[in-house]
Length: 115
Length: 115
Image (cartoon, rainbow over all chains, first blue to last red; front, side, top):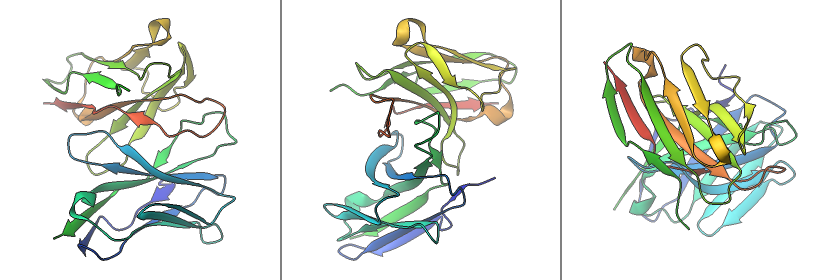
């Protein structure tokens, strides 16, 4: 039962353009969402998060949008840089539950930014 | 601050053998997690510790996997006996907060290959 889905296994973007990574979830109890970035042979690193009481959160070149009615969130990277090339994971938590660390991850999207 | 330390980085064993992984979390982080990441999938939580107590081990295959966190700091994850499907990257993560969403800090993982 895949509760968090990233339906695009890969995305290729030109440097300077916008990258949009998408994520869908099915569990309506999820109320906190995170994006992680992962380089080869390294662990995932936290990028940005959003609470379900918001619909947008911005941090520099990274913006996360949340559409609760559609159970959909997206990560926008503007402008994209070659160093952004990595695997991006969407993750979700039911923060009101008993286990704050029980992140449910999507399958990941490989982003490639071409110079 | 020093990150989450894991060892070894790589391990190759034959099926039915045993293996152990070690993790040292970020200093002061009370919560420690072990995740399993199979190729092409997102990380899946195996077990979560709060100090030296287990908070969630619902997805840990307890017939072959065991984990401990003596003294509430370092942790070891053991597999005995290993199966082919245990081939994966085992990620350790830690976080500071318990009573609220807090980004997890991941180590670089141990890549296990079972032949």
